[in-house]
Length: 366
Image (cartoon, rainbow, N blue to C red; front, side, top):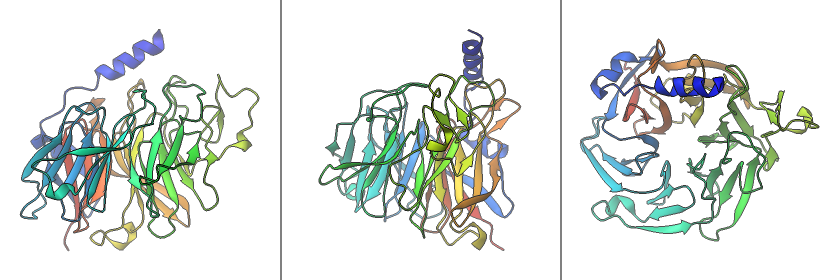
């Protein structure tokens, strides 16, 4: 009961979002950068993707909407918002490929063909509809692999449980043949991943289990290296390559499971991760990993609520430092970062499903 009361208290502290015009005053970005609003009034903005024409698409979770955001004059601010779909089931994840917009609902992937040309009358077709229907950890982040498959995670329908092989995995889906393969297993709930621009190594975030206290287990950033496809990352038996689960860890060996590339703070809830590949930021940011720590909901004192930068060198994370702070101050929540996308000019977009905005981070001109 004490744990439940703590959780409910933490949820109640997620106060109503501040006005969009005020949120920027709360945020501090790393030296040499500026942050502005690319779009506001984007209810529950989650994953974002940019088409070749520069139209920004955004999914949502609770709102059930998919948005198109258009910056007609290329000034870094969207001047038109079109709601291209409503009433979908947690359409959190989306991706653009060959002009088509793919959207992940809980149990299916849908596709809007040639979306940029059909914003006035968007229609979708079902690409795949055989994922589990469980809403608990059923929302998804999706992306296309360099080899063309659609990467789709399926979280576990619980806080902690041992389910069959439909859950707790990251899959690749051939959208033409419908063939499914497993990229990683033992994954509780990944809502963010990216491929390294040079090595093509697959990196993903994973949210650790709840109800083991304030400080354990860590959330994780993981790496799938060459020859490691299908490796087991521990859940529900081992957490962060170091902690045996009190319910499911009996008789298990930590050495049998893959350790994370980086163990994060407990409950910081890493969602989107993104290797910067643009030309606007200073050279030291090239191919470095941005991490959106969405923030805790069940901790006596909040943690996360930051955009972090992980410095990656030869497949290892050597440093992990704040890039944007201020989303939470004195236990009051002002925003919760979710996911990233790059504009053609190299500026970085970041969605926020609490403040209902999309930020734009630019390098200051010298």
